[in-house]
Length: 330
Ligand SMILES: Cc1cc2nc3c(=O)[nH]c(=O)nc-3n(C[C@H](O)[C@H](O)[C@H](O)COP(=O)(O)OP(=O)(O)OC[C@H]3O[C@@H](n4cnc5c(N)ncnc54)[C@H](O)[C@@H]3O)c2cc1C
Image 1 (cartoon, rainbow, N blue to C red):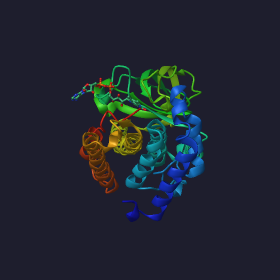
Image 2 (image 1 turned 180 degrees about the horizontal axis):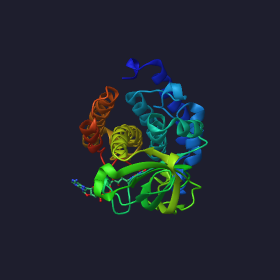
Image 3 (image 1 turned 180 degrees about the vertical axis):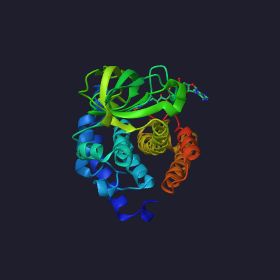
Image 4 (image 1 turned 45 degrees about the horizontal axis):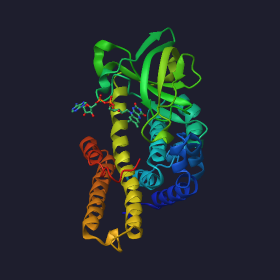
């Protein structure tokens, strides 16, 4: 597939491999064992041109297609999926600022997001609201020139070290999803508190934590997407995220498969490498075949997004085809 990609896409994919081999693969196991976050590694990605992958080149970004961006994340996830996911969330917010923010917001945040000086997080989910995102309860009340945010956000990737939070909140409960707006909130904003990082079964590099908003004042110019638009913007972001997570799963699965094949040739039973038994060969072949099928679904969805088609179904199908649990080792 890479052969047909544009030169800038090939360059980004090579940069992703170099970045992964230098800064991720050798350290990923230790970071997980120590339950550390990977925010400092995320900042380093700017040196490889990996921050703002889909931000327009006129804004200083990579201007890459969804297909090329998915390939970058697939390569990085081969070293560590949580690192790739952390990078993806940051880049999605950079794209959001590039596409939807005011000129003043872009001037303020894009240089910092692209240089890694500021790390970003996406705050939609709440402790009691996940899949049904239109039902969020975090409230945004207009007060003179400010907005006042009150509520809680949960499962915020990058929260442990993020400098900028894109927060979705309800301005008018009666309006349902049409009342939801999105705001840019700085970490230092009064009334914003980041909880301790979650203690998870794995994936601590993502620095996932909760956010508490208590009378958190955001100036009127912190509104990044108004009521009526913000929910649609969030859903588009989730569709992109589904495509990119699918590609990441294919990356980590490649690494898992290679490790399994290598071990099967070392491990001996009954005087032979276990990989020489047909029963095990069938299992490995099944995984390799499922991975190819998953890749086709992921890149079909990315190609649909690049044609500005609604990729909602394609993205959901790609993410639904989960890699075999036995090899998704994170
Ligand atoms: C590692 C990780 C990182 C995350 N990062 C972020 C982030 O950065 N920002 C953010 O905002 N959120 C983030 N999330 C939250 C994620 O988007 C939510 O977990 C997701 O929206 C599901 O919500 P929930 O966990 O509350 O599940 P629920 O909505 O409670 O759903 C639980 C289960 O109920 C069933 N169900 C629910 N609705 C339906 C339906 N309509 N049809 C059929 N079955 C249904 C399904 O089996 C579903 O799995 C993250 C989550 C994880 C695990």
